[in-house]
Structure formats: structure tokens, C-alpha cells
Length: 138
Image (cartoon, rainbow, N blue to C red; front, side):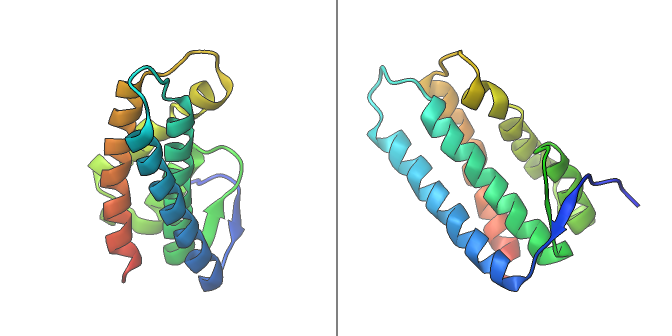
């Protein structure tokens, strides 16, 4: 059994609501990227992207394992692997990991992230969200 970190039990109603929240974050991330001026920094967009990825990951773990991660967001990857096993492609794990690794710097750090970094993060999110949506339709 894989150690997944602290988790909390969740039901189908949670999954339904969390998917709607994830979709809302995705829409906001897309809008933020589309409306950004060339000189704007990317931290706000990237923060939304990261929250979206977390919401999709929570939706998946709640649906397939009945639990969500609590606390350390890096532990969500372990819980997602425990929930999906081989159905979690390495590419999607890497997309999620890459987004989560930026969380502290984007949200609490002082470095201004570029629009190019935000655009790359949105591409990773788009891939992860499309894959998650396929699984959530089961």
C-alpha cells in the first residue's frame, strides 16, 4: 500500500461540485491569459492554473478513491496514483507535478513570473484537464 499522506473522505456530491469548481478555474485561467497585456506578469494567472489543477486532482481522487488530499499539495500526486494506478499516465503526473512545484513561488514568493511561463503552465493544465475530464465522465 502506498503512503498517501493525510486525506479526508468525500462523496459523489463533493465530486460533482468540485468538478464545477475546476471548470470555473479553467475558464478563469483561459480568460486571464487571453486578456493579459504583453507586459503583464503571470503570477495571478498561474495561481488560478494551480488551483484548477488541484481541483481536478481532488475530483479524481474523490471519485475513484472516495478521498481527497489534506495539507501538502505534493501528496495529492501519491493519492492520485493510489486512486488510479496505471490509469495515471506519466505525462499527466508530470503535468500535475510541474504545476504544483510552482505553487509556493507563484503564490507566496516575490519573483514576477513571465507571461511566457503562464502560457506554458496553461498548456500543461489544458492537457491535464482534458485527460481528467475523460476520466470523470466514466
